[in-house]
Length: 431
Image (cartoon, rainbow, N blue to C red; front, side, top):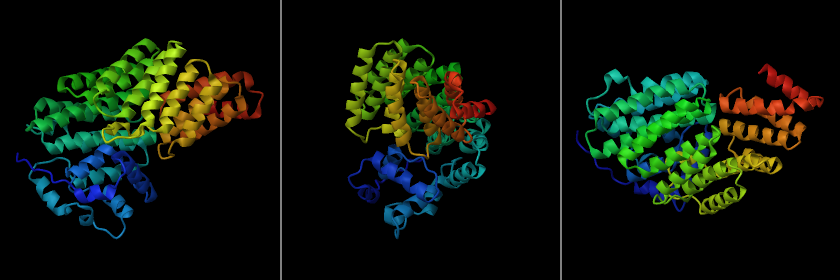
């Protein structure tokens, strides 16, 4: 297969100005919301555009970019004509084209249901494993990367429960592509990174839907892929999720060790935000061990690294990690240490700061707030917050969130003489 060199898109780079790729990606997501589009733009996508790897955006991104820069054409933004890009793609025998990407996007949006959307992921995006090419090319690597983005996007909107089973299909395909081999080393590197990130994404869906053994297996698969390919970023991501899982499984010491291993892997990557997240993972483990001093030291490191701001080296998958997530993870530390009023303050801040577009996280942070308030002796406020979570669960499917809310309901049973608490408990029981 012929190699096609990328020409950097200097025009698009100038339009970004002094903003970091992550900051500009956030602007793109906000612009998409303004016109009712759904894109999972992040720093890595911006990097691919500016490097020239994306010579023409798909239709969703086209509409967003033209909305952001009114009066300009795609050519004015430094992109190549779509017909030229498609002509080149046709020479690659690619199963994943711009047209298919737009069809998939519309399928996700038209269904209105996470179940319908999940059903399209496997074979539409990556194809039937019985029809895989003899050697993987750039288009197959791009399809694996896009599968990761779509799964993350759907999880942000709907939660994991309806997605997990179907999301396993593209994961199998990704590893089948790795087994088939690639035509170039750069393509094989992309496939390793993409397959590893896909394993983590599927592992997270298992994690969030209460399938802890499955999650552990998928995270271990991602870690093995990282070690084989020498990918420190993927290794740090796998350890971060393994630390999170260990905390949820009641293995705090394992959580600490996994977070520390992730920090070692991440040291050379140049991403303070990644180091901040790993410090928060470690803090959660220390809190589980009731080691307040070590927990506070890790929280201090987390805030110090977070204050350094975003960087071009921030991984694509970290688009979820902002101030709201930092507040949420800190709230979990104080809750584990039994300081529920303090935990509630951080959980409330997390819920207030979270973009409403990410319905799953809004529901999660509000569920954390409800539980903290219930245990802090504020039953009426807890019932109010629990009611908000029940509203969100009409569109979010997450076993983890439902389990948290059930625990809150049990704590509130002694306070059921309160009309607000009684109303919440009755509604929770029916749901």
